[in-house]
Image (tube, protein in one colour):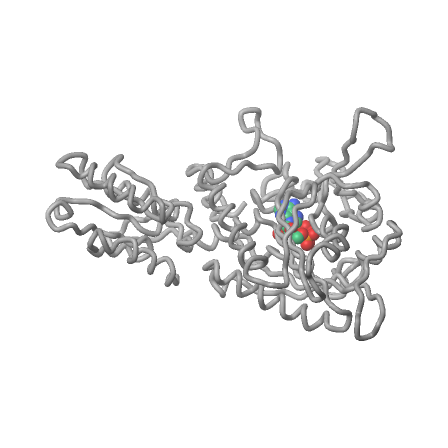
Length: 444
Ligand code: ATP
C-alpha cells in the first residue's frame, strides 16, 4: 500500500470511519465495517446519488430487489458460465494472482517483490468463478444451490416487465437500485477498494435501439458532472474508454470513470452500453416477453440498455482520498485535514464554549440546540480550542463555532473555516442563514 494510502486508512480507522470486519477475531479478509462517521458519510453519498438519479428526474424510478434470486437468473445472464477471472498460482510461495492484474500485483509473501519474483514459476491460468454459492432451504442438495448476487443489475432486468406494467414509465426510462453485491475476488486489497462484500449503485436506462450511442454519451457526461458536484477535483477524474479487447461480452461500449488514487488511475464507476443482451437472454430463459410496444412502428421491441454502475465503497474511498491533505500551516506545523464538501461532511458544525465557565457552556449548548435541527452538529467541550479544531479538521467538519466572552456581551460568535482557517464574527441570530449560504455556495 502506498504511503498516502496508509495515512488515509489510518485516519479512517482512528476516527471511526472504517474498521476491519471481525477484528477481535483477527479480521476477515476483504470485509470492512463502517463506524459512526463512516456510516454517515456513506448514507450521504447514497442519498446524493439517489436524489440526482431518481428524485430529480421524471424518467427514472427506484427498485429494491432481493439479494437471493433464482439460480436460473445467473444462468441466463451468463454469470454461471462466464463470471470468471483468470487465476494463476505461484508454484513456490503458493500465492494466487489474477492473471489480468499481474502488473499491479505484489507478492504477499515477499515484500517488494512482484508475482513470481520470489523465484517461483506461475501456473497456466485457470478460470475461477467469482460468485458465492449458498443453499436455500433445509436440504443440502445441488438443486438448492443459489448465489449471492455479484451485481444488482440483474434484479433490475428481471423486474423490467413488472415496472413497465405497474407504473407509467415509457421508453426511454431508467430503473435505479442501491444494494449489496458479493464477489469472491481472487486478489483483494487497497482497503475498501476491492472487497468480497460491497455495495453498488446501479441504474439501467432502457432506450430505443438506435438511440443508444446518444444516451451513452449523455450518461457519461451526467456522471462526470455528478462526481464534480461532490467536490472531487476535476484534475483527479477522467473517463477512459474500454479497448475492444477488454469489453465485457454483453457490452458494445464502456467508459470507466477513473480517479487518481494514491496508487494511480483506477476505476470507480463503469458506464456501459449493455445492448439488448440481458433482456433477450432473460426472454429466452424465462419464456416471458421483455419488450415494449413501439406504437409508431407497431411492433414489439427489446430495448437497449445504458448502465452507469458504481461501488458505494469505492465512491467513499474516492471522496476521502480527494479530500485528504497534510497541510503545512503558516507557523510551520502540519495539520491533517479532510476537505469534504460540506454537504457530505458527517459533522457540518462543531460548537465549542471557549472555556468551561462564565456561562459559556450554557450559551454554547443553546447555540447547539438551535443549529442541530438544521445542520449535522456536535457540541464539543473537551481539550483546548486548538485540539478541538484539529480533531474537527481530521473528520472534515467545515465550520467550528466558538462561544467566548464577547458572545455574552454582544451576541456574536466566532466561525472558523476549515479550509482557510480564517475566523469571522457573526451575530447568533444570523448564524443559520450564514452557514446555509456557506454550505450552498461551497467551492474548494
Ligand atoms: P474491476 O475491474 O475493478 O474488478 P469490474 O469492472 O469488474 O471492476 P464492474 O463489474 O463494472 O466492476 O462493477 C461496477 C462497479 O462496482 C465498479 O466500478 C466498482 O466501483 C464496484 N466494484 C466492483 N467490484 C468491486 C469490489 N470487489 N469491491 C468494491 N467495489 C467493487
